[in-house]
Image 1: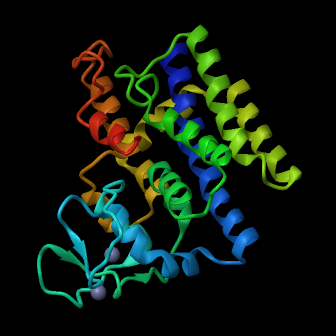
Image 2 (image 1 turned 180 degrees about the vertical axis):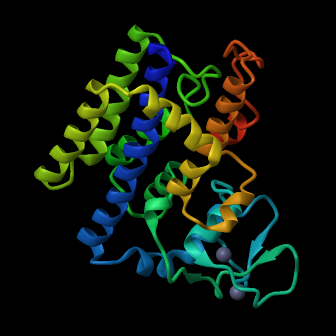
Length: 274
Ligand SMILES: [Zn+2]
Ligand SMILES: [Zn+2]
């Protein structure tokens, strides 16, 4: 039997990962369509050089001679596999160099599997949004995803008062991202979000939710059946959920053992949030 506090936490996880994730995916498609009548696949083709640099760290270089683009180290290189077929063929041979000219957008591209880290990064770093106030709207939502008060809180429960306050903040952040959509679609988001808040997660919903987390069905739902995702080493939403599940299943009083550090992922998750 899940407690009210645990249900609160699960509702917030669903709000953030499901609707927060989806609204950013929709926003990418919407902006590309409106501004450039471009598909996501066309966008990836056009921006593959820039996207590669988003994943490059420190002394790594791309394959373009005398390239002056800066390395951003904003995304783990594993994210490239969500966007591109990774070709064995490279135009360069140095291990310090990464080739972008042989990257091809995935033929089976499905951005419904992209997470908040990836979608927010593309929106902010790839000229999709240039208006500073609109960029801030995206950053606000991303900050919730990286917040120590939410996925990184260390204990999978939340009292009613904090829940009401946090729900308002996170749902407003999502609605702000959705505001540019057609009115009916904006309303669709608002309705779904209100329904989640006011509805009751049944015991079987909750157990099902934890089971999903445990079985990584949730993982597939978010990231797709891409085997590459199994190799993720840096922060993902799912690692945090798996961490919470391990806390819960080992019945360690659902207390944080690491004094608010919320697992090993916190630093890497915050790293991109400069
Ligand atoms: Zn370059
Ligand atoms: Zn190349």
